[in-house]
Length: 93
Image (tube, rainbow, N blue to C red; front, side, top):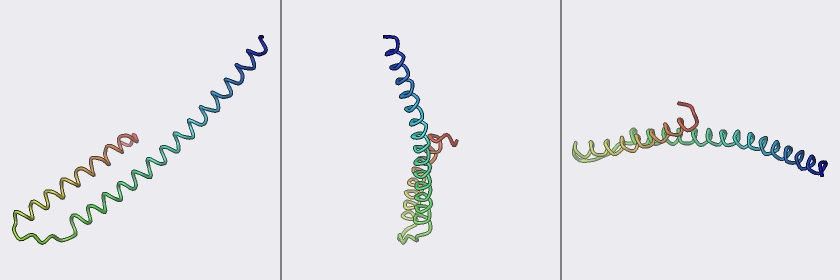
């Protein structure tokens, strides 16, 4: 009975150790994926900046121009806040 318990204890210890090692690997892979996603979001952010601010608009009035710029700024603030939240989630802030 004692030897069976020792075998079960040994096997349990081996399984727990293997799971801990796998968890470490998965955490590293998750961090790498998060960094790739962050890079993609940053690239998207800069693409949006270039499209929103460097593509000309042709509204007929000054009020329309201000409205378009206001909308563009709102979208940029939204994207920037999402990027900042992602930085915080990754512990980079």
